[in-house]
Structures are given as structure tokens and as C-alpha cells.
Length: 94
View 1 (cartoon, helix red, strand yellow):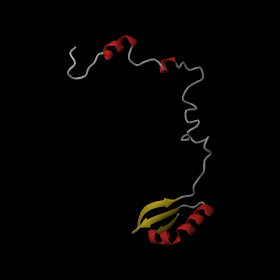
View 2: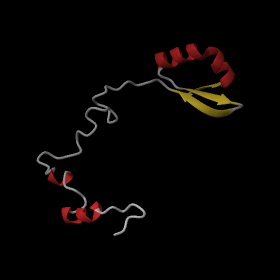
View 3: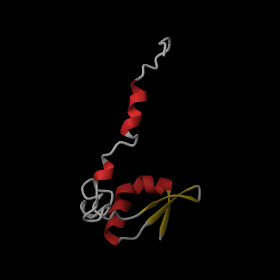
View 4: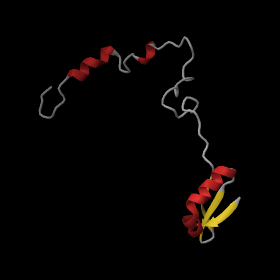
């Protein structure tokens, strides 16, 4: 892997990016002799193949025939909703 200082990289940035794209070889960029960044070739992935893609990201989450009835049921039983109807505001007598 090629190594270059940040000052040299700043002066030759576009040429170094072209070189990395053409050769596929990464370049390590240093500042005062210490590594701070690595320039590597970008790899484009099709959006539908990427797990981060918006469409298809839940593709394998559920098995065919999954029962979805439990997803729409309330998490508080219906019988317990009545106590929530009480006016709990300050100053309201029970």
C-alpha cells in the first residue's frame, strides 16, 4: 500500500483519486507520520441487493404464512382501558 503525507495528498488529491480508481490499490494518508485516513476504491452495489436499501430491507424478516394478527392487537387488554378514561388532571376530584 502506498503511503503519502497529508500535504502531498492535498496537492495531488484528484490525481491520487484517479490512480486509486484505475489500479484498485489503496493509499494511506498520514499526518506527521501517523495514519489518519485510507483512500480505497469505491465499490457500487445495486440498491436492491444492499441490506441498507429502503426497498427490500425487510425481505427476509417474516416467513411465508406468518400470523400477523398479534401485531395489531393492543398491548393493554381492552378491559383495562376504562381506568385510563378518568380525568387525572390536577385539582380534579376523584
